[in-house]
Image 1 (cartoon, helix red, strand yellow):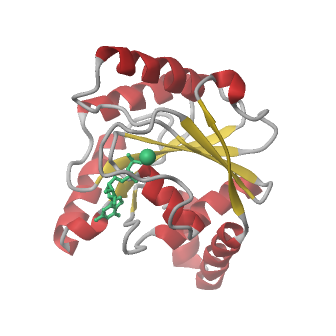
Image 2 (cartoon, protein in one colour):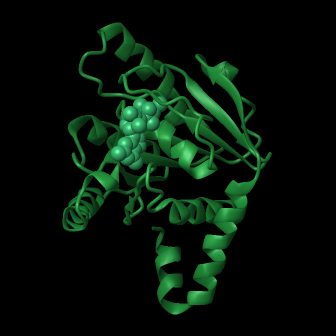
Length: 222
Ligand SMILES: Nc1nc2c(ncn2[C@@H]2O[C@H](COP(=O)(O)OP(=O)(O)O)[C@@H](O)[C@H]2O)c(=O)[nH]1
Ligand SMILES: [Mg+2]
């Protein structure tokens, strides 16, 4: 949750409802697949705000894009880790680009593939001028792992705003969810480009999705 949203929830319940509704309306609009880019030059011109979904292979990036947009098959999901090697760009109603990034940290990926990931994704994260926020997805069961920390280091250095989003909340009991949320919030403490608040989501059960929509909608106002 963004600080703005949590302040709103406490001080102004009607404003809170309105923020959730604005998020719903934003993502109820048409969302279309634009391009699978394998090179930076293939990305659309940076003429619109953009958010990107980053995280380890299999963390649930594509599933979360689908849950946000309410479309089951917009972004291709896979039971086999490491299958997405391109930057998949979606156009939300001509207002916002959503970018589903290739996953990292898949242990069995060959060195050559890791190099491609670094070339493409790291350049993207450092150099995309319209990138408003990176949603860095973390599996709620596993918490922050060393490869995630490397990406956070990079984002802090490049001063790219990012927010951690826990995925697959449905796999944990409520008490474990709370514990992991607290641990991950502790893990972002002091990181200069990170939002202090961490969101808990489940793409399969829809938990946390309205809040994430609201938080993205708020970006467009800024
Ligand atoms: N239980 C559960 N499984 C999920 C969730 N999100 C994704 N998955 C599963 O995790 C696997 C990887 O998801 P995917 O979206 O392809 O991950 P990506 O590699 O990060 O794009 C798939 O088998 C999904 O069905 C979730 O919220 N809950
Ligand atoms: Mg994917």
